Length: 187
Image (cartoon, rainbow, N blue to C red; front, side):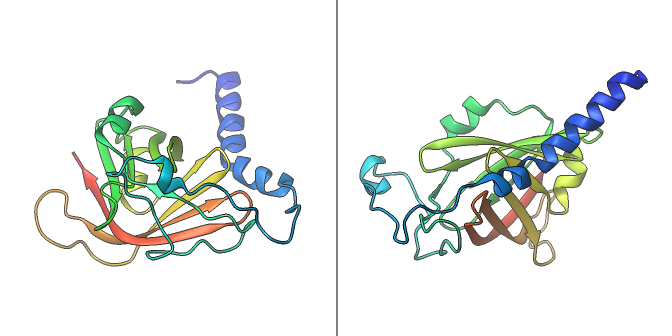
């Protein structure tokens, strides 16, 4: 049993964690110029094997006009993340395998995951542990929210069949990108 003071502190911490993306959105400055400035192409900075989300698969809408560049996670990225938990879920499609990976325990109060934006692996968190992840979680991180929406029944057989889903990545400035793929959860 958690002592009363620790329980209150924990509840406040969870509340702040869940409200952080909205607080960042409210505090985001308005764009300075009407036209976005040109930056170096991220493709020129990346290794040839890296896969980056482009306007061909999904467009960035809203925000300051800069595009969202999501990149497939590598084996080294996932190993370095060292996510705690006995069960995992991941989002992937024909282009990105995987784009997001998360782990949690069945009886845990939270789960943790990672997604790669450009060349940076960013950590995410969601309440509810593994059980909550199975049915479409909402992950939050520093300045972004990632929502998994299940769009149909599981396809295929076995213990962990994939389910069709969409991944919506939203930055604090309101920019968002939606990708279609599969959400797979299990051991």
